[in-house]
Length: 243
Length: 72
Image (cartoon, rainbow over all chains, first blue to last red; front, side, top):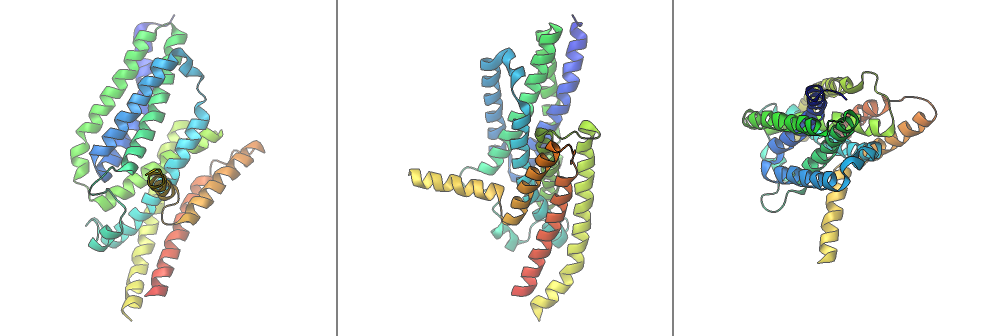
């Protein structure tokens, strides 16, 4: 039987990786579309998770995480690419000045009234998938080490610590212009979506989880090139529009 | 009421998946299918989706510029 301290530390560190992914999505979506419906979605995800843990218990370790990753990753990838592209267009057009009033009218962004299903859905999915992965780590590691208590504490501590860190950076994030934030969140969603979807398919990433960082760099550099191309084409387009 | 809710849900799902450029979504879904087939053939094609995602973004931006130039 492994020592309680070792089990706590191992599950804490393993859960921190998943918790960072979970909180990144929640904070990013919240800063872009508002926190109200994002947090409702995150809370909904936690409720589903709590029910899954209560009903499934130890059997959670048997959940086929691959198909779940494929579905959720694909949805994040498809939606992330939309924000990625819109972010490129807006940052190219306005830099860090934010949205153009005309673009605001076209934007299907946070509704002025009513439920923001997009924010809810993105946060719900992120929390459910990552939370389920944390639960599986906790249950499988804790059960195999014969130390379920310290394992649960390690997983819960990781969520609290990373959640509190995310809440602490919420303020500074809100000061970033929305057009730029949309590009950043689009890049994050596209990177996580690519990683999860392909992992769900059974792809072996050369650097394992480290490839999430490489995907982020790849998509960010590509966005920088596209912004440059858009800016070069802009005067020509304006000239055509005025002729 | 049911029709209205179903319509709203359908609109949300379409907007969520296809957005304002359905071609990007279709190519990315095909890229995922192709990656799955390549995996079955023994090729670990982790590079296909990221490369096509960037290529399709570039294509979509180019199409947008071309449309603006045409309609101006």
